[in-house]
Image (cartoon, rainbow, N blue to C red; front, side, top):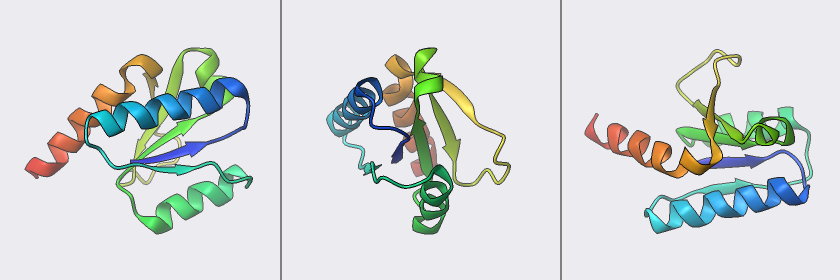
Length: 102
């Protein structure tokens, strides 16, 4: 799972750390992109790296209690799912399990 951190605000940083911890407990590898780069650079790099699942943690979605999920296979940049922060680890675990059955 590629976790893209969109700002260095306390709330976003804590949410990213939480996601990382929860994924580690579930045995899911994740890459945290907390670089000081523009969003477009981070998204382009995410596509180039090729990690199949991307989670974006930004202030706007987080204010509503959500993070953004997008599978790499989805080419439409507007097709993003908003998943509640407290459910993202389980959601990703299910996606990883689905992928391992394919």
